[in-house]
Image 1 (tube, rainbow, N blue to C red):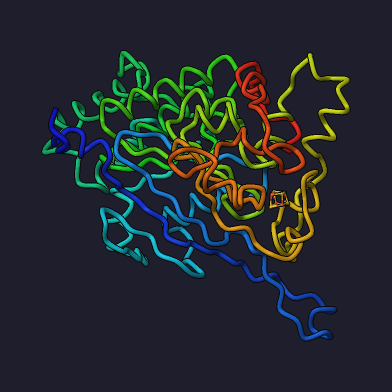
Image 2: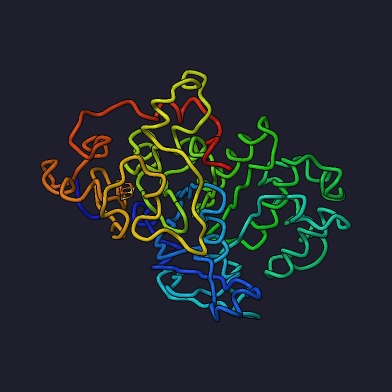
Length: 387
Ligand code: SF4
């Protein structure tokens, strides 16, 4: 067996879009009190976020509402200017700006919104939306016949068949799932390399969510798209995503392959997220609730010093209140930004890495436990974490 990667293997691991230490702070409108106190307040929406989206893979970004995950999607879509950091497309730093350079960028990177009804113009038909996308991106073809062929191909790609039944419908004549498929078809009209899907199924009926996720997975495989899947539902990340990143209060706190992160969560916040999933077996289990923590996310105008999770963390130590934990690499590509893994990250295993199971509630070594993996597989929504 040769150690050289085949061209196919290289393609599969290609990084298409990359965020490097991306930060976004929004200024808060000043009140009378702010004027008197001469203070300028900012919302620390996203701080020092780095991630890579690879061709033919789905990366899930999971977190509570207000954790900054949708802001990350908008930064990657270049809808907001960065406060700090860089975005690289195909290995080159890009700053889309407006006008032609923005159009060139969005041809490669398309954003799908949470609410398909709001993202489609109610006074226009499916034909109008898709034709416009094809024309803007120069893919309408020559003449009416070619345009019709391209429109039909787009609808077939999102499994709205036969196409002629959908082309002249208005958004209100479609179901939620069909509208989201039209929104996806419109994104595909640009022939992008990257899809940024911001909670693409959270506004759909439970019965049709799986169909849309399966469609996105099919597109990932057939078109080799790099997909960012933003969700508050960590169980769906396990089902759908290759890699999972967990975000808390504007920072990414854990990452790794989806199976490992959901079955063997390392960061106390990920453990809380999974333990918060509805599970009839745990309804009266207050001890487990205490072990994983509870409470509300902090204000991002004045986020806690040190580890932002420390006010809610049942394992918080003194240094957590003052020192920001760096990223500690664990086994199997998993990592966590948590002081519990300092020291254990070296020497815990033969290759010098620790596993999530090596650290127990009091920060000492322990045997692996069946924490929340079962819960993740049993549940559909991370209850407390989602709200
Ligand atoms: Fe909890 Fe400290 Fe780890 Fe933060 S760094 S998650 S407060 S133990």
